[in-house]
Length: 275
Image (cartoon, rainbow, N blue to C red; front, side, top):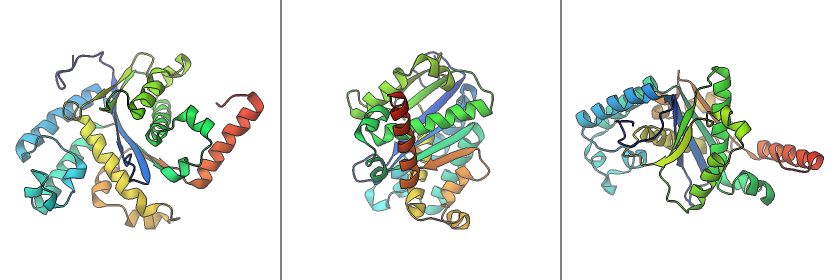
């Protein structure tokens, strides 16, 4: 029983909170982003997050509403001046940075993934978000290997209504993973679930990261930017989460997607199956 959520489940040593951005039909880029930390790290996070909520005067943090124009009337944000909004955001970013272990984000331009052959998409996920989640999982696997971590992980996704394509594909990905792969991701004794951001407050941190990655990507894609160009376009709010922090970010462009598809098709030609 985790007292900070009021929901019972098996306690794992690590917890990963994942959220999306840009998955609506109007967005050209889909984002999956997550934060990983220990159970004790998230317990400390929730304690400080709740203190900030009570002292600053808000109940639930949603980044899109926080940055929305005041005339949209999202309270309490529409009643705050810029100085208070900056102070509160910086405070929340500090709470995230001090309690997370690593942040990960994957950006997938939808037009790029839409060119992938249907038989590969059926294998890896028709939903853009599902594919982006797969890329985040690979980064978690590599981070676990670099850090010599073998403890189980609970994966918590933002709530999705059962029966939707997104819920079905994530369930298939996480629940149908081959037993020989589960230990790589801590799923052999860990697990996954879909939860409310209001009850599972680290999801609000993942929401902030997903929004920042989605806000940043159009500034650097599809242009070929130099490192200095990229740094200059880094929003101060994103810099608070990124500079000096353990983070991993990546995105697919047409050449990298084409190369990935070619590797899969070459494997299929040699072995008769898509890996």
